[in-house]
Length: 92
Image: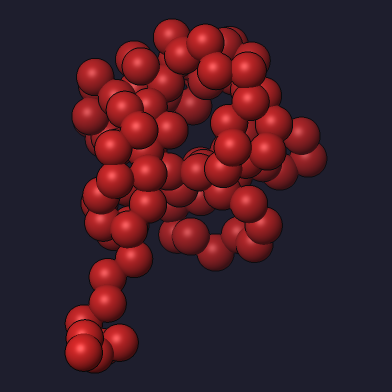
């Protein structure tokens, strides 16, 4: 039996759809109808996760998914582009 102390939360990336440790992903959430970064992971409510990897961010922007299940809503392409630009600026 595995101890709960060794449990590491795993989440799926909205871009590449692969699963990874939550600590390696950046959280995004909806605030007042707009997608925002939640890097300190302090906001409540539904959220999604992204790798900081440029390939994942491009897949997220180009995605044809009508509704992101994690967020329970669609996200317009221009809004996805804005978030990926913010992530790239924060990383660089």
